[in-house]
Image 1 (tube, rainbow, N blue to C red):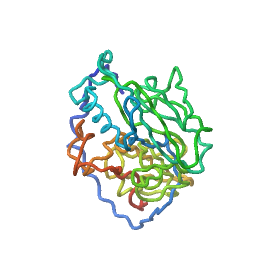
Image 2 (image 1 turned 45 degrees about the vertical axis):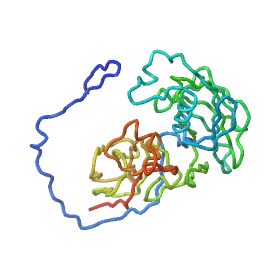
Image 3 (image 1 turned 30 degrees about the vertical axis):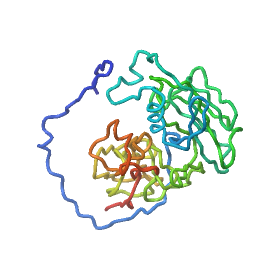
Image 4 (image 1 turned 90 degrees about the vertical axis):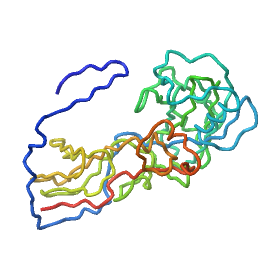
Length: 338
């Protein structure tokens, strides 16, 4: 453990150790027994699940509603047609700018739609940037923005509770109205709560969370936009080397349920060796990336050599209206080797 100080907009790089290449070679161990752990598995999430809403009907200055369009393309259309400057990669980021510049403004309405299954008892929050700049309604009912809002993931994303009584089974509509000008950026909004998300193309439906997770991509198991930690409870009730041969995550932590043991694995191979494992098994905690939450979510192809401001505004053959999601989760059956 060491202490360091970082100033505004400053970053540091730490190089640790000078003899990494002198480490002894890893011994080769022969295993006579392989036990597959095929699942499905009980699991826990350490954050609320998310549903991205980034397509909206839109209008300017009370005019006719324009058809459903991705939010950054709405911003581009308003900038081109109404003289509001468009932000770029060279701009000062809004959170670091001293104040919004004076300039032309337009009254903009954004109408986001989503569906809800039989899930009306689940508390749902709306996450968005600059909530105080908007009038927000849910199915025609005003949504009160607290004077002090909590944040989630990043201080720019503020949490606004939605009135559960205003939700409808099936169709729902969130309307945002604002005076749009330079310094007030249009961005995707998010629903957060203990629900699952089912996608049909880019149409989102809130459904119950799965009771267990199967081997395979969690994007198709109600968690397409989730990007926190997923704790799989693996029933490996004996000692040996636990191996996750194919994992889609930033890193993996193996944790004993009683908290008396933690093995952190920052890169493949994702495995740990234990003399014994309690009867309740072991937890494989996958730390996902934020890619499926913040995107780019419509960029084609998904795999890119770099990501920058331009990749969020792709077009033509590099654009898909449907969400382009990277796989996440345990993608192959874990094995216990002895």
